[in-house]
Image (spheres, rainbow, N blue to C red):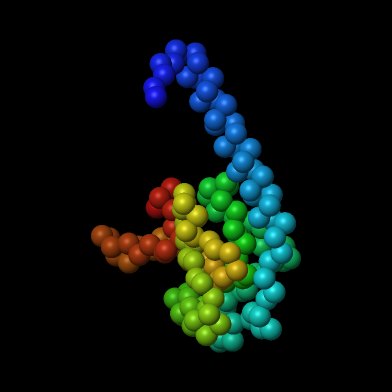
Length: 151
């Protein structure tokens, strides 16, 4: 069954559908926030000789660090590991493997689909590894969290 719509009818219908999708997504985000988060493991401190900082729910920076570029995607990781070196990243991955935690990696923060975060797992945040270093006149070393604007 097909129907022909005038331009005005089509625009009204599109606006109504878009508005309903917006409100449906807002109520979903509200419902997700009311779901109790999983209890943390007895020790969420990564045993290491390096400089990893662990941010957990309730810490001052948790909400700003868990949020990605796409504000419509709201995920709540169990912990966020702020890494300053490749050794820190290796330690964080080792810790996640030992504790059977799903891992997501957040570097520049521009993941439209929300793959740079997860629910109940470990997010490895590379924002402290944002650097541009000239090795010689023609070679540059770029850190994993460096954005195009910084480059």
